[in-house]
Length: 232
Ligand code: NAD
Image (cartoon, rainbow, N blue to C red; front, top):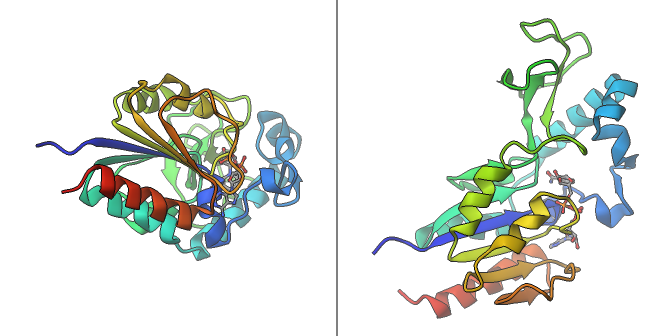
């Protein structure tokens, strides 16, 4: 029998135990910055050097970080389910944990792109400097979807989500659309779980189990429940 389809929608909270701070828990600041300063086209236009420096630092921190038990359980779910991870995170901790199918809805710290042509995307391990140009002559920028920018992968993510048998939301405040909307379009009978230290209110969602816990412990409980519901 083919494996059941399971989707994990993750946010900054899944990486908190790996030492990467979320931003809403810090009063809407991302590492001390107003998000519009470092994660919007206006912020980029106003001060590209600050924006490059901000993501250069985030990239260094992400390189040091290790996946925690929550990322590892997401990987382990592949033993039983056909798993797709849809992450809002720009770190690479799902990949470091070994997950096979990861969609980075909001881009990745480990890619940069032309500011003229969004199709010119390159891998990056080190820093991006002011003056680093794409072949078309424009400044290279982080390949991150900033506030106010389109989310090109949302259609793919929606198609995969709608098709899921199990949908797990972990560590996201569900404040950032269109990612937050994915949970609203699922079938009634899709089995849904939400793991968050401080769960957002989504009482209107049917067939949803809310686990108010840190990501590692919450994912352990989800795994336990799934093994009860789908014994081998
Ligand atoms: P958010 O900061 O808005 O919300 C974080 C959520 O995680 C909150 O609901 C909080 O209660 C929960 N949380 C905090 N610590 C937790 C823990 N230990 N275990 C379980 N839950 C915990 O994050 P978001 O919803 O992902 O949206 C933020 C945006 O900021 C995203 O677009 C993302 O790209 C970006 N961001 C990414 C990273 C990263 O890549 N690790 C870090 C910060 C921000």
